[in-house]
Length: 278
Image 1 (spheres, one colour):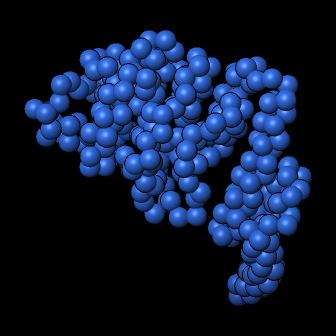
Image 2 (image 1 turned 180 degrees about the horizontal axis):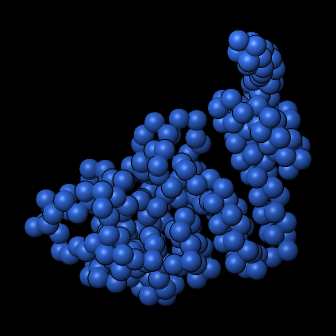
């Protein structure tokens, strides 16, 4: 299901047309709309979707078929390899799905390309939300949790999740965070007061780690002022980060960059003055 691409996608699809049951390339309302179009045409009893830059690993679908031979399995997920240079320095998602319900309201814990569910579950929770453009899968999992379903874990590598500079995961960090906050707000009411306090503390710590990672990237990119600002925000969000070696590394790199900026600025001003005198 292609959204009317003009980058040669249609030519590639055409090469494999005889192996495809159906394909289309037409304008749509975004990724969620495209996923819904595909799932509406699906005829199987086990559903999934794969984005164009991800892959299934050899033997994956056989593993999934054997898992769903058990009628008690309604929703299942497995391991996923991060593929591409942009994966360097990124933490992987937890190895197994969360056991505690409140943790689902903190962050996603399963990889979408390695996740499968029955048609009955899809009929129960409905289509993907078209108002979400980045975390439609996370919101979909939360609906399954609210409906009372638990994930069956397949401790097998099933897919490859490709990260690159143009992928949504790599290039839309701020948008990811805004959508995650919006999704949490939709479902926080399912938690008890005690669960909500645990989730809020965990989200605050997660926000601090995110800001620290952003500060590290800014320091490496030669933006020490922005880096120090985000480090300060990270410390306010989660003071315990102050004792972390990663925080110290980001701080030292930002301070080094700041010290280098001053003599460089002086040299540039001096050079500009000498040119003007000539």
